[in-house]
Length: 218
Image (cartoon, rainbow, N blue to C red):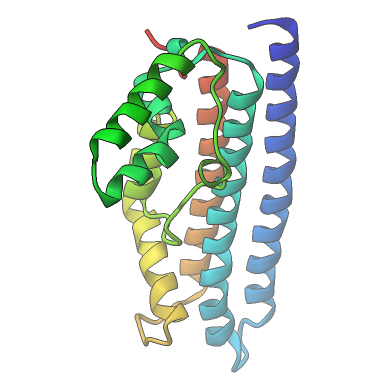
């Protein structure tokens, strides 16, 4: 990586660290609000309200961090021919979407012409790919798909799958006005630790990806 690339990598790490610090403080504030209502008639309500907030900080951080990573990839001027096929396919998502209405001969030719003409061009993303689609339900399998598209190794986060999926399901039940299991202080503490661990783990995954240039074709 060039010196300017090193600078961009440093800026990426610093920006993600700043976003993580903000989210960490916000998660702690949510837990403190729940604790402040312990022993009152509003405690169960505060616990229920905390679940969507904790999930929102996880999803919000993931979208921010992954968007910053995609923007970093677009800034380092790596040729598309040198990029891993998973990442190149992701960056071409808009072209593939155009084929969904029918693969005519003209569309095939257009795609092939783009293929031949762009391999020496730098990797680029359209806005839709930069925005990161978490499907508004960032279950572990959604995270794993995004990681595969972006050549990230989230295997170290696998042990958090069950708890993360539980958080998303509980958030959905509350968001849709359902009556799920009773939520207490210990649940909020467990989910607080989960969200903090998830965010810190994702920060580490991205740092390793930058350091090892996992986006490059091997």
